[in-house]
Image 1 (cartoon, rainbow, N blue to C red):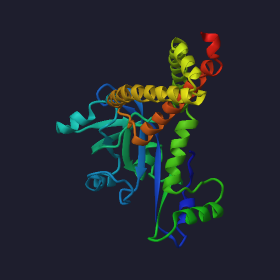
Image 2: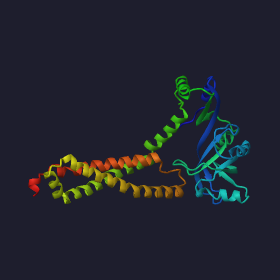
Image 3: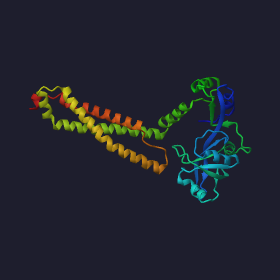
Image 4: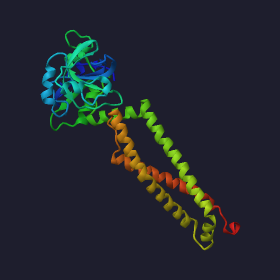
Amino acid sequence: MEPFPQRRLFQAASWPEVESISPVRWGLLVWKNPETGAPRGILAVGFDPDDDILRLEGLEEQKKSLQLDKRVLYDRLSRSEFGPVEEWLKAGRTVTAEVGNTRLLVADLVELGVSFGADGNLLTSNRTFNQLLGSSDGSSTSIELGLIRLVPGADPDTVAAALNKALPDDVRVLTKAEFLAFEQDYWRSSTAIGFIFNLGAAMGLVVGAVVVYQILFSDVVDHLPEYATLKAMGYSSMDLVTVILQESLLLAGFGYIPAFLAGKGIYGFARSATNLPIGMSSGMAAFVFAMIFVMCVISGLLAMGKIRDADPAEIF
């Protein structure tokens, strides 16, 4: 997203359904490790400390320190490459660091968590954020995000549609749910990491289908005389298909259990190694099981071709 004029947010404040507005700034800045001086990109978020926009435990008391210039709150879940900030603060040491060629004081710790876009985070006031970008008086006419709080009872979808229609095209108004969906869709479809995840899932499905097909096909070939005998006894091809489908279901179930446990372990290892907020939700686990079941069923139907074409008289 690109910065946009802050006056768009003030224009939105004139709507009768709008109770308050909150300008927010963010961007990747260069943080220098206070111990080694090594530079690394960190995500800084600037907001008005008087605004209640972040739901973090203990933040109300910590925000008071942001009223002073050049004070920041450091994310304790940031990667270790940013330096021993948490250890120094807990030891009672004063921690200062250089961010964007400006010396800052780390006032306290917060808990946010890293993301695919940033390995660490800082919270500060809008004034300090603007100073980091070179504004001498700490003011700015542009922002990256504007938050709108509606009066009780107002419909977010209706207000968002009205604001989108009234405001110029240099801004886009979204409800909170739409904004979350927009961000998730961006990482899934417009970034390399989303492509890699999707490609890996697709390749896993294809390879799994081939493996299951080979297992079922080999089983059908090994027991072709038995299946032919059943056909000669009067069992229909559909009866035999049911047997193969039951076998497919057993393969899906018994294969899913160890794969689920292994996946949980890999998620936990990746989360502890990278601090990324990743995990297997119940919805995703159910979706994967459904995909595995469909894969096994399709493989089973393909493996049945040998039985459907088999003539009991020719086999014996």
